[in-house]
Image 1: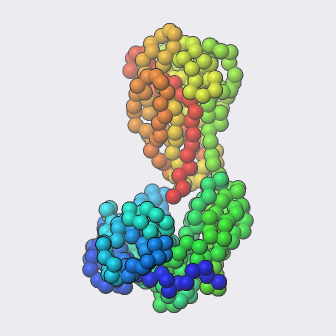
Image 2: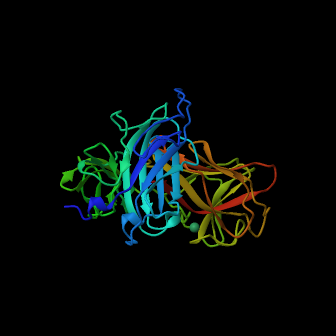
Length: 404
Ligand SMILES: [Ca+2]
């Protein structure tokens, strides 16, 4: 049994690529040139309904945000958003993307909000797998043309987009759409569906409204139902939260004011150095390299062209990650207290171009995102040998799993 009447959701949205023309229920394109390099500008038409006195109902929606996320390791995104023009009467409004889209497979997700500028409550949502052909046509995954996205109609089929990802310990809404007997993709009010999840190689729990919380990494099977129509059990992926081992350089434990350098490995950390020229190591508290750790007692240091690196196991190919860390310039009681130009790499590819920490105090940095290509990744902090006695400090590193 549905929780909200569908006839109270009278939006109609049509997706167009590369043109602003056509009716609210039509699909078309003038942006296609037939080549694989075609870039088209998606346009969304919204048939706004007459506004009602119900300020929290779907009819009150004043803004929309639609995301087309490419289902590829690059995961390019095209965002279409805007506010309802100031009219109380029903009318059709076109919203153009600010960037272009290239042919490929996409996950389309849409949210309507009760306030302008994506404020207030979410009044209706949908999520559906689509394809964008080189001629700009948006299609269903079976190749048939995607019908207009509407907000009312008799439900024939419930679809959960494949490939949705979740993080252990990070609740997230499951995307779902319903298809009407006329072939329209329907966006419904949050809470219209009832969800269940069953474990596969991973495990998760889900609220009846579809907020999924991962328990353990792996696949799970998600099912949604509305108006007595059930989706097929659809796999979703739960990702674990990966971290560096000893991200704060607290092991091995050294005496206050001391440090160890010129080692290939210390605890789970490794580094490159040239004996008598540059080095890396772990220091405890105030001493030759710094005044204090960012947290705990210990921190890492590297000098001139030395590097520090660690390989993290368990990355998932195709999933996006980034690294955050705290860095400072050397601030010890001897030596050259000059920061060293440094950059950060993932499997040898630069994910943070060269920069120089300004000195003290500690500052936090976040790298660019990168896509894992295997089940492990090696993160390297690399100094540049400028010929001077220059050194940097590191502490409190994190590997961030990016789930959109
Ligand atoms: Ca520390």
